[in-house]
Length: 291
Image (cartoon, rainbow, N blue to C red):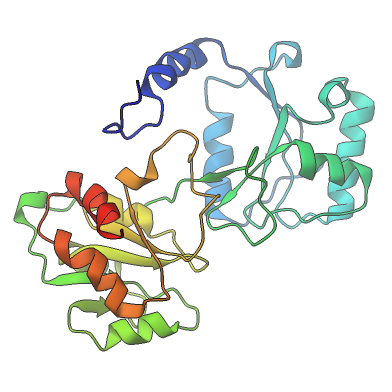
């Protein structure tokens, strides 16, 4: 029986599997071809956590997965050369043509003609950042990082929050869309026109019921919204296949999804009925409001 109230898609399967993973799961990290240089803080954080995790083994024979580390600025030719070296030095790549290997690349790899890159892109698991550049995500195998919250200061209890605005739209450094320009003219929405300090952002999150993110722009602030009780609203006009951990988490319980084509009128139609509802019920009611 499916538990639709759970945050997880299959809690009866996930939790036993997770406990078993903590005991037996092993990852072997190949030695990078040169000093590893990761330009993205997300990539660096991932690699640091991986290196210090209990899953790492020095014995490749007992590994379930193999991590292929390469620098963010490494050329595709150099990556291909690295894979070719792994193929010749170790037996593990050839056993599955890279299907039990994974790598991290926030920029994402494109499609190349070199056999080594073709196998890496087609077979290995790519870990990237949401949203992924169009055409560079393979839904049945690739995964994305959950957005990280950069603000560490604790906010007062949610019971003391005073929601002055229906929604908050954070400046993302890109050209603003027609929807954002519409929202700017509506007093129910707070638009951040310039990047703010952490303390200012905490105040804006605390004074807004919802935080709007346009898919395709920077949605990393979802992590901060969740931390401070501001319900994420993802504005997107097509199904999202690259949501973080979407094979595990029921995102409809976390965020609200609304299209942009109806403009501010459609956004308010979805959000207005649930602005005074507790966080735990907001997403479900807003999803129902769309239909």
